[in-house]
Length: 233
Image (tube, rainbow, N blue to C red; front, top):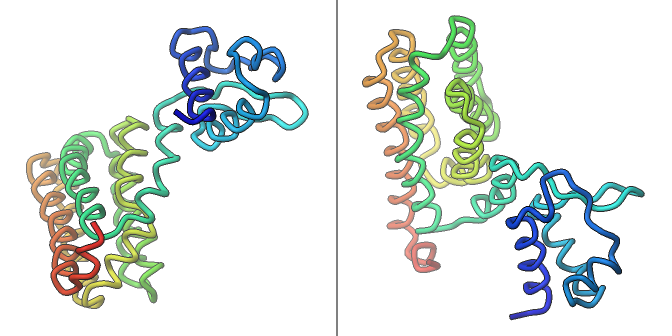
């Protein structure tokens, strides 16, 4: 095991054991290095890595602290994996999204307020007026995010954002016959909103399932058309 990995494991073990609680300040570098039996350089590398993972937070001039360790905060660091996903890996992320998002949409049917529903309708209007793929994707993300946020579970919201990021969605749309894909997406969004407005949870689940499955199909078709991309995974 690399020295940096060993140092990271030792710090994480202290957090798991409760020796370092969320929000607590780490001991001074020389003290912690001696306590863990590490060199100061290994400890610094471990702290940098754990900071990037949102496990630790460095405050300029004040020291390094354990973060709040809230799951949705820790999940943010996984967004890059979705951004760079290609081929079968991207498809697998979408498959997981299909398992989660329709159920969340069904739950939201009973929780969205009248103001929420009006906002969703406004988002779809702006989506139809989008002039670029990037603009369409921004509205697409906002539409789905607002629905999931109504469930009131920040872990679920962040996980679904990680599973399908702006970069990934734009790449998928560009990899299809864009006009046709966007037209289908508009119709599917309308079906989802219609189900939410009638508070029909089962219909909302079905409409969301059809929508995410269609995105999967677009991506899968692209893999068939591009065997080199499929071979990457």
